[in-house]
Length: 133
Image (cartoon, rainbow, N blue to C red; front, side, top):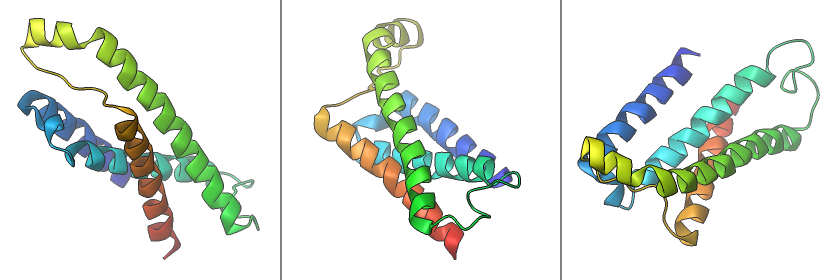
C-alpha cells in the first residue's frame, strides 16, 4: 500500500506543478497522469479485491475475468474523471485565474477524452502484467 500512496503523491504533486507552470499544453503531460491514474486505481482495486477469503484473486477465477473486473473498474473511474474534468472546465477556470493567476486547462476534444480513457486502461493493464510476474 505504500507504493500506492507514493504513486498518488506523485500524481498529485506533479498535477499541481503542471497546473502552475502550464504544462498541460504539452501533449504528453496529461497522458502520463492518466496512465499513472489507471495504474493507481488498478493497484487500489487489486488490494481491495484481494482482501478476505472470497477474493477474486485467490480463487479459481479465470485470469480473463480478473482482468475484466480490474479494467472495468478503472474504465468506470476514468469515465467519472472525464465528467469531473468537464464540470471543472465549466466552473473553475475563471476563479482559478482570478484568484490564483493560474491559467487552467481541464478538458480537450473527443480525441483527447478517448486518449485519456485509453491511457487509463493501459495503466491498469500494465499493473496487471507487472502483478502477474
